[in-house]
Image (cartoon, helix red, strand yellow):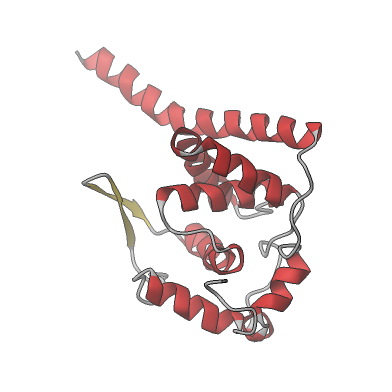
Length: 187
């Protein structure tokens, strides 16, 4: 059974998503976002570019039903990359890094989500307006291609997955490598 019923509006589905995941009002007005890596809390600035992208990202969680666990975030990140983040550069940046983390946690799930996204569209080119928020979830899922099973992965899907995975790994590793080089110079 679907967690977000097809007959709910996008607005009601997003409200339910916020409630279920204890996200308050989505945190769009917060200056910082907080997340945990194991027991370690980390903070990132909640930039306008991130806020613009996460408004769509949250709706994508509702439509795809990927969870907010690390694996679920990696799945939705891979799905968003392969279905095209368009001009939302913060989404590209964050999704590539989270996809790379997901490859360490559950590569099969990340691969399946990526292939699914290659055969769907997403909302990153849409306008956030009352018409979108009033749309029934089932109708929007159908419009984006989420109601059918993705076809079997083809060579182009596999090649795209490898390419984007390498980009994500590079984006994730580069700041770490710069930090290690900086430390080695200081020591």
